[in-house]
Structures are given as C-alpha cells and as structure tokens.
Length: 327
Length: 207
Image (tube, rainbow over all chains, first blue to last red; front, side):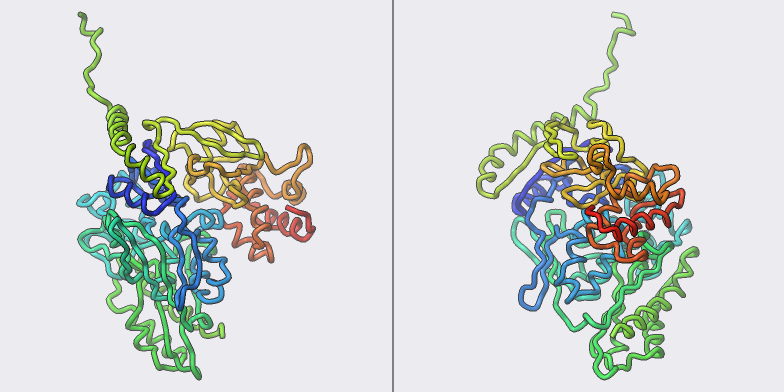
C-alpha cells in the first residue's frame, strides 16, 4: 500500500473543513472496502481523514421517521430492536451482506460508498472506464456473469454490490448530506447514479460533502416482507440477483407495495412499474408473475449474464410469495 | 571527477516531494487547528511527515505504546511488530477470516483495519484466549472434535467461534453455519467446526 497522511477528527464540522482544504483526501470509516482498494492499487489517496470518532452512530425514532447515523455499523443497525421491529426488511438485507466480521466494522455511510466488485475495476492491468475513464470496458465483451442487465451504458455494465442499499431504496429512505455551508436532504433513490457517460461517479455526493444520516419513514411494511438473495454459495457472497419485497395487505388486497432489486444495475433498482401494477390487486401468484414480467421491460443481457434475464423475474415472484406467506 | 562518482540526477523522489508538501500543509493548517481544537473538540493527529505516528493499544491485556506507519494493518502490526504470529494472514483482503481477532470484544478482520484506527482499543488474539496452560473451552473443543486439518484457518475460526456464541448466534447448526460464513476452511473441516461450537454452547461453559 502506498503510504498516506493520516488525520483523525472527532467532529463532523472539522471533518468537512479538512475535506474542503483537500479535495483529494478521503474519509476513512470502517475501511473494509477502502483499505482493500488501496492494497490493490485501485485507489491511492494521499490523505485519509479517520472519522470513526465523529458521533454519528445514533439509531433512534424521531417523529414518524427512524434516524440512523452514517457511522452506525451494519451489525448495530441489523441487530437494533427498533430496526428489527419497524424496519425488518433493512435488518434482513444487512444480515444477507458480507460476514459477521465485516458487518461489525462496516458503517452505513461506507456501505453506501462502496465500489463495484467488477473484476475489471479491481484488476489495474485491465481497461475500466470506472477506474480510469476512457480506457474502455473489459466486461462488456468479457467475463460479465456478475454484471448488470438494467440501465447499462456503453461505458460500463458494473453493478452496485450493496444489499443494505436495495432495502433502503425500497423503504423510501432519505439521506442527509452536509458540507461547510449546511445540510441538504435527498431521496435515497437519487443518491446512486446510473453509469451513463461518467461511470467513474457512483453517486451524487459532492466532493465537499459528508454523509450525516439516513431518515427512514416508519410504514406498515413490517409484516409482509422478504429479502431474497440468490448467490453462488449459501452465505458470504455477492448477489447474482436480490429482491427486496414488502407490501401491506388488506383483505388480501395489496394497499402498499415496495420492490427493489440488487445485482442487476449500477444502482439499487426500484421496480416502480411492478409496484404500480400490484397496488389494489390481490396478492396472487398470477399477479406476482405479471409484476415480474413488467419488471423485466428493457432488460438486456451481455452473454455470460443472460441467465439473469430468467433468474430475476423468478426471484421477484419467489420474494413476493415468501413475503405473502410471512403473515 | 569520474563519471562513476557522479550521483544520478533524479531530482526529488515522490516520497521526498510528499514529505515536503505535507510539511507545508501541516504548517499552513497548524494555527487554525489550534483555534478550532478548542471550538470543535478536534483531535487531529497529523502523520509525522508520512513516518510513524504514536499508537497506544492493549493486546491480550498488555499495554503497548509504540508508533507505526499509518499504512500498517492491524494484522501486520500484530505479526511483524508484536510477533504475535498466531493470527494468520490468509487472503489479506477480508475474504477468508484467517486474521480474525477481537477488538473491544467484537470480531473483526485485522487485515482490513489500519493499526492506527485502533488507538486506545483492547485487542484479543488467539494467544490471549488460553489462561496459562489451560486451554479455552473452544480450543479444547476444536481438538476434541478434530475441527481442523492443516490448521491455517484455525485461530481465525476459534476467535470467530467464541464471538459467535457470545453474540447469541449459535442457536442451531444452521445459524452457526450462517454466522461462521466469514471463515473459510479449504480443508473442509466445517462439520467438525460446527460440532465443536455446538459442544461448547451446550456445555454452558463461559466463553
């Protein structure tokens, strides 16, 4: 690892001030992705600002929302009584990700900021428009079994690797960001970007901004829910396809529904057409099948990942079935 | 002067440049920091010109006051500086769990943690589990159930297994498998590892 300057701060204000002074600095939270990328030479920041002592670890209900600080660990969130009771979908998604050791260290903000696990992004000998804009995409005609089928661009077909983010996209979370001038709040669904012409940008966080907290509305989606992750081994592997499904039932009629997919796009992929179709309908297999069919509109395979075109709708149907049977 | 006596003119190395530029940065920031420290509860520690910075931590109940380069991982610090080589380097990328240690009671991959991030923390490694010559119940159970073949992953497995019970995630064989999934065993001793954990859990010994 190329050496770097190490700074430590215990307030968000000073962390932001340090970042403002040096845009090439990076925040260091759990480090489980950043340190790995630095070891492999994918990134080599000259300065790391250790923010682990900044007091942003809260998990609390404020009015009708649950606030989660950016530095709460994945384990702390997943195992918190409030999250298990009111946002069980988020708890499940978190437990489906990484390993116990990684979840103990990895933070909510770091989870949002993690980079793709595309092999071409990680291998510095290979072309990658995300790592080195303009160098080309090795995955497009290469080993692309793990890659995207939705919202791809000619520059990049990488997927966002997070499970937590899929649940947050489904739950209509918001993100509070701050810079030296103040705070702004954006929808979680607008935090991550599609690759487009700028695959080097994973998200819409500005270079002078820090993630402060999540705000998640408490809803009636804590009864019929499921996070179904399909992967190459039973645990501790990235998703081939994952589905976050939650709905509210009233006399077997769906009154509210959320669906989002992971492992299929450059960002958590919310299935709004499927949701619109299911609202007001009966929670039946035929309706689930129709919703899955609607979700696949515009999907495109790149060779090795063609199997996802069949796996994705099947996973949606199964996730909805499992959510229904949970009642 | 002979040609061979001449030093090649390579100019400043990247390292020299970074040293100098960081001196400038540090100087430029110092007065402001001093003021802000009072205002914002700042505890900023500038890497000493990319050299070693102070580190205080406790490993297996012994306090250490040393200094390390910021890029040194907790794993390398334990093995290379403290010569606690029970903790193993497997993949060095957080994928195998061989480097698992406890930090303030929580299991972590020491390969993905910088030593300097652990300032003031209490670390327990495999060397800190036994009490003198008396093996920890989990160590004894791994021997009893033959929970290893080559043994390379074993210290990580044991550290993780102890944490698995402490966390309350050893309720069933399925739960144990799920919560031990961050520890890979290429010999495939998994059934025996689960047997060992079940035995310790059911035995009710304090872990």
